[in-house]
Amino acid sequence: MIKSELIDRLAQAHPHLYQKDLERVVNAVLEEIAGALENGDRVELRGFGAFSVRNRPPRQGRNPRTGTSVSVKEKHVPFFKTGKELRERVDGKG
Figure 1: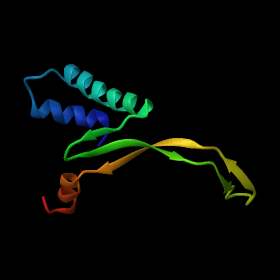
Figure 2 (figure 1 turned 60 degrees about the vertical axis):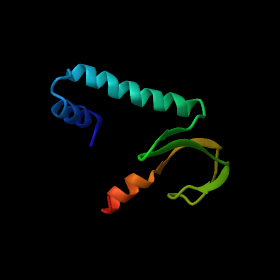
Figure 3 (figure 1 turned 120 degrees about the vertical axis):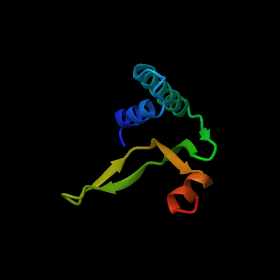
Figure 4 (figure 1 turned 180 degrees about the vertical axis):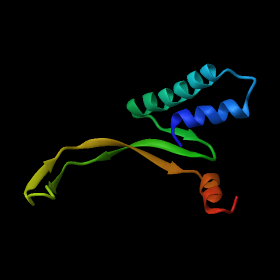
């Protein structure tokens, strides 16, 4: 599902709300999550999961095409850990 499909489904489920308002809400929620991660904060949505930032230390990699050694810089990457309720729903137990 892409963001526009999510907005369409929300509009169908809540016909009393304007689609533009739903789009603003979805964008605001995603922007808040991204902003928190950018600041190094953790975002936890109970029952759904937690977003956090993990540090990947510098390392030596290899160019798969040439086989030469390449230095890979340290970086921070977003990480998502599913909540118990979401894991159970996906697994078919919920």
